[in-house]
Image 1 (cartoon, one colour):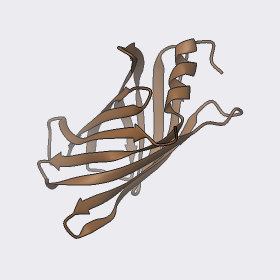
Image 2 (tube, rainbow, N blue to C red):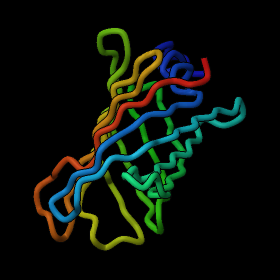
Image 3 (cartoon, rainbow, N blue to C red):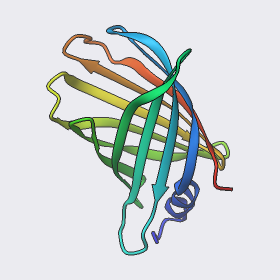
Length: 161
């Protein structure tokens, strides 16, 4: 446990099972909707949370696997956050901060390193975390889209209450 009570409160809020939906849009892609499952776990002997996130593309014909990401999320007593993840052949390191906001927290991250995908130039993630919801956006720029552009918007609800 951290000496910062806000870290402990945020960790306690994040750990669990989440489900929801989101939308993909980007100048080089056709827009589509997806279903998402997110599992966040903690171990008393490890300072980082582990997460696994999976999505399925939604269409009139049903759903099909889309994205699978796994990684570690470390929330620090100095109000900083770091994510290390692997997704579809790419590894990503993100750093940022968290702060209390209204009745929850705001986590803001930016990419500081990418491996395995030369297209990536920059990325950001913004998560609004409440007791029973996580709303997020993910923006990126690539070798084909120079400006940081929103790519994902999603909303998850806690399912393990």
